Length: 261
Image (cartoon, rainbow, N blue to C red):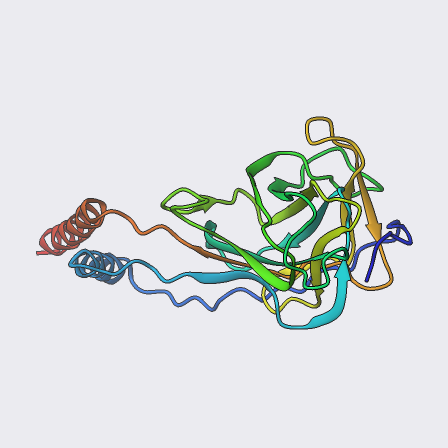
């Protein structure tokens, strides 16, 4: 179990690998307009909602290590894959114990957790932008001790019905546990590497307060990458918008044909 950081992170981060650009095929302008128009009208006949796609997944390679941050606010800086940015589901793994209860049936007192999402656009620490602008906050009860469980956040319950818009591809999500008694411990499970997206091996720790933060970038003997998943969608255009685009496409195409007569 990891309790305290060994040293401040001060060396250069390794670059994250990214996929190359998709191959593009070009059609004639008239043919492209016609295809877009017909496709838009076809989609408007009742296309289903777009399926959720994974934009981050660090839940496969279990390091068999647990991180105990105490009452500190700690954050994991990640990079998101793809272009879907309306978050539908977010999950992360946690654990909790109470040494005063051999059966681990309850904590010694109520415990809460606060999860926050940040853009990394703050004053740099050792050359790396710190978490700054928060775009999501939620505080909730942790419940009973557990050897391993998952917190689940969903659109329509924790996020807006259409999903929480993520305004960046480089973000930090943080968690802070509060209310533990002397015999209580709560923390997160560590995984690495992620199978979707990117995750730096270090972690952020706020030694200030939420309203007046002072972030440090730290590391330990293993990658401190919290076990978590994110699924998102690209919002579907409305039926009216699709009909307008389809109609304009076909009218443009037909107008082009008439002008050649």
